[in-house]
Image (tube, rainbow, N blue to C red; front, top):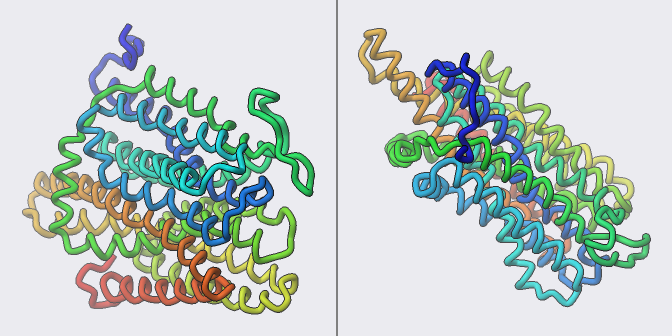
Length: 456
């Protein structure tokens, strides 16, 4: 039997039933790969915290560079995702993309055991982690494109919501993995630290068996059916739509902030506050954002995506301003303002989840509405317009998510630059406050005000 062609029961041989079963199988086999991709993408958010204890003599600015580079690479590669699917087919591309996660996972596991590893080699490994970002966000769009019209939104919502759980997984599991000899002598010797032995290599090695399992499942269970050719055409069409640039800017503020904060907060807490081990609870922030995202979707369906997005960005501006003030005060007395900084980060992460849900709802509604307005009033024409709008919305969301992922680079890079120049991350947080205010203004003017040309 050819890999990817699993024998189906007779009751599923009807074309409609078979197609529905294929879609369900594709979703359940692809979602683990999506979660693992996000986990490998954010692996450096944990590793950089421990590099000094492992004997590496990198500056704080260099550590933030390592935390930022995976997002830069992932966002850039995501823009070319459809080309890879078109050339290889869905199953082969998913297998290769998932297997490629072994490169950074194994590479980091080997490199962190040698403090003499140069910074340039670490930069290469950080860029390789970007393969996870490209694979994760690209797989979300591919899942939606494969789905039937009625299930497309649900597939996209499920994948977009579960993907960021990979960030929670890596920030919760990696600290546990490095605390013990999970692989015995096979993983190498521990690093001696002031707080006892540490197996930093396990932060990379722990993902190897999971990646192998997800790769095998994709090879055996997926197929090469793909609409990549139409996907390329869709991505060309969306550049003629006026919404594209505005929605990409809003995704930079919502999804980009979620990724950037997840990459920055563990190292920021570790270096700015005298609270040993507090950084290990940083996964609670991404968990809060992922948990509130379904609530944001529910609110957006009933109150409108623009309204949810507007108030979410207001919360983010307040959270960034609060965090900036807490860091300024923490320069004099870190212990007194730690709780305020944690609360501001919780507000930021929660608002990111709401904002991302709101902007995704806006994308879905705007492109469908645009098609419906230009179609004839006949029921058949309206139905066709709704289908075409849904396809365009999926392509637009893929592009906006790729642009938004650059926020995962700009935020840690800005924080690192602020620390290098002023000794405090407060100026970077103040800059983020201004940016979130610009997102508020754009949302209100283009989509939220009473006489907006495209209310949603």
